[in-house]
Image (cartoon, rainbow, N blue to C red):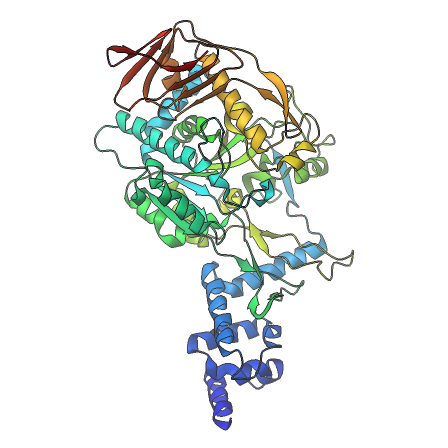
Amino acid sequence: MASTVDSAAEQLSKLGIDGAFADSAPNLKKNLHLLSSEQVELAKMLMEMGQSHLFEKWAAPGVDDNEKRAFFDQVAKLNSSYPGGLKSYIKTARELLADSKAGKNPFDGFTPSVPTGEVLKFGDDTFINYEQAGVKEAKNAAFVLVAGGLGERLGYNGIKVALPAETTTGTCFLQNYIECILALQESSCRLAEGKCQEIPFAIMTSDDTHSRTQELLESNSYFGMKPTQVKLLKQEKVACLDDNDARLAMDPKNKYRIQTKPHGHGDVHALLYSSGLLKEWHDAGLKWVLFFQDTNGLLFKAIPASLGVSATKQYHVNSLAVPRKAKEAIGGITRLTHADGRSMVINVEYNQLDPLLRATGFPDGDVNCETGYSPFPGNINQLILELGPYMEELKKTGGAIKEFVNPKYKDASKTSFKSSTRLECMMQDYPKTLPPSAKVGFTVMDTWLAYAPVKNNPEDAAKVPKGNPYHSATSGEMAIYCANSLILRKAGAQVDEPVQEVFNGQEVEVWPRLTWKPKWGLTFSEIKNKVSGSCSVSQKSTMVIEGHNVILEDLSLNGALIIDSVDDAEVCYIMPILRYGGQSCKISEIV
């Protein structure tokens, strides 16, 4: 035992730790000889940051020794996965917790105004031109899917990207996203002069979703994408906090573990930076990075035109947005100008925007303008960033995004929490660190075209006040049929009006069940060129188009129609005969 004490004393001496160490963490001192030099350094850091309580219940040497080493393995991971390490995390936590306790307003000194952006009307010449520009630019883009969550909120235990976007074909969200990217890749390559490269696709996962996402990809041959195009980046969790002093919380089930929770989807920026992917993409000549969420089945209908806006306007940051009703529960894209001259264009949450407006000279707060909507566009958490300036900014921050803390206090004294909290960050807060010279804008699309997230389970969706979006799997599927029906109408087809139906306690519009593969028509121009003559579709009809070169001419559909062809075949559907490769054949139709 004497040798153990001597060894500990020697290590303390080498590290320059005085005798106070023994008083504050005697159990750690007894166990120092079990640790590597790197682990001892981590122990010193924890002590310096006031975390001696982590060792209060440690057993004597010889008991749980492997668990003690595993504790420092966890500390090492927490330290390495956070920009600046645990020391920086604890320091930031103390500052934010002090602000929270004091009730400090994060927007104090800022005045809101409507930023500059582009409002598009689907199908007009401006929209078509932007869409064409976006398709050309797609070959210079990389896509990033934020998919770290399970579907528990939806009443589903699997990963959300494995859920079907619609049940007519059963195509899951991940398959739809990959097929959209491949369709963009093909269209962009056709327009490109010279060699065209594959579009990279990165997916941010978590401990909960990583292996399942990998399995979904591998078991489906990556849905047609080359495995080398896909990169999975696993997000690590962050330490929980027990009190306003930012004391790290112990796992209630294990005295040798720190409790952890997700840090938020803002981690995607740090992961892209630390993985070296951004540099790899930049060196390959890419110019854009597009971020999107895991369960919005409409998004890629809006991507080409939005990318065209970024390229044309030379936006460093382009936030995709939809028209927003005043006080609607969706954040607003807002320019904030500080009294000292600083300004930024960011998302302001709906529950913060109205009081901010009232406090800065707008007595009516968040109200609709002459358009019937709030002048502040609704943020849908889809970002397009110019890669060069994005990399330069992350070099300054190491990928760190401005964080916030949201502790639930036991009482008005704000001295203790109901449960542990942690720092969080959001992907859309990236612009907070940008200089005023950065070109930050937005692109507004019709909601029916761009935004139908699947977030709520049927029970919760049924309780949503009438007139507000359900954001459920039911409403998300109906939104896809609605968008496809309206697009075909705009292309010249006659599509019957929907009927009102109630599913899972939700009253929704039921349009014809129209679906098609992205390779048939990802842009409006493509679809318009494939619809001719006098086409009509009844409300009770279902149509699935699986082929690439399928032409709808004088289609009159009152039933079910499935067109499935190989990519190099030309298929022209003319009632009632289908011409296939110059020969007539029957089509799968039930009338």
